[in-house]
Picture (spheres, rainbow over the protein chains, first blue to last red):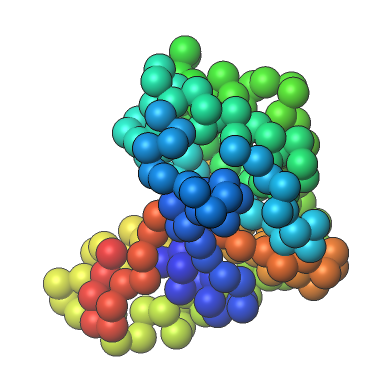
Length: 34
Length: 163
């Protein structure tokens, strides 16, 4: 429901994995944080 | 890792589930401290935020819970955005009308009726943060001219189905 509600008010949603990629550099790997 | 490419015009608002899932699974603090350091850096950089309603959810957790301790930690007070303003309440009201009209359209069947009622009452509850988080994001986009994103693991419900 939350993504639909966000879309209704023109707010974008982002998954944590994509945020990590965006703010962790081009060499980001999922396991880098472990 | 860094937030060096952070765009000051963007702000990311975390829902409760994304942090709970991170804590319980992928980024358990017992072995993924680097993730939580990254998260704390995003908070201090001013680009990671959430709603005070999410804090209330965390404070209802068990004693010793990592996110309950996080919610009580005054070093992260800036993370929690207040939602008590007429402007945010107005956005919240828009969401409730939308949920009870547009969102339920094509979802209401005998099979889904009970779950729809629960979903709508939860969405309207003061104790659940989802609607307040969206209302906050919308308000930040309008008043602070920020591009707001909600960080969530939730997916949209397909037409005719209920999450």
